[in-house]
Length: 159
Image 1 (tube, one colour):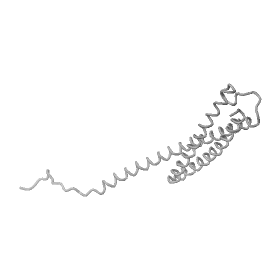
Image 2 (cartoon, one colour):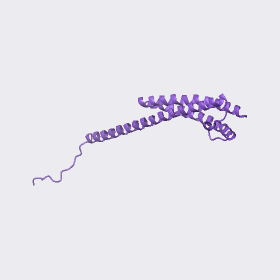
Image 3 (cartoon, one colour):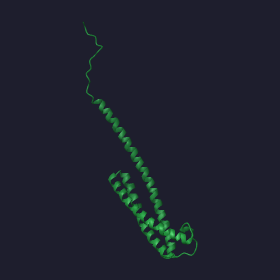
Image 4 (cartoon, helix red, strand yellow):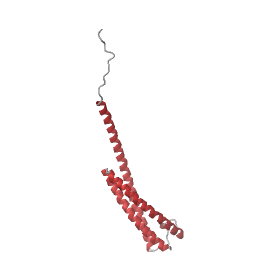
């Protein structure tokens, strides 16, 4: 493929990735809501859906990197932002699309960090609840013990 065709191909891949990344952001927001409501079932479903989207993104990334490396090699650059020669509209659009993708990925990352904190807080609350339940069980077990009859060894008997 010639350079312009490669750039157009990368742009199409980037458009697909942007759709997937936006969907990933939406799912991450839903995860946040599920964590607040402590709805484990919905959270599990969202994690599975998110994993599927991430796998699709990985496929697009691999294809993108293969073609991207060809362009970088041809232009003698490390990334598109370094290129300062004449560029086509498609090339400009690709650079802009990549910038938008990175922005959305950053939002997803930040939201994931918040969700991780929420998960840790939920785990800590659950551990505290389990501790108090165990303490309550031990206390209750002490009250439910039947009296043990023991013989008195030190009681004086009249002779």
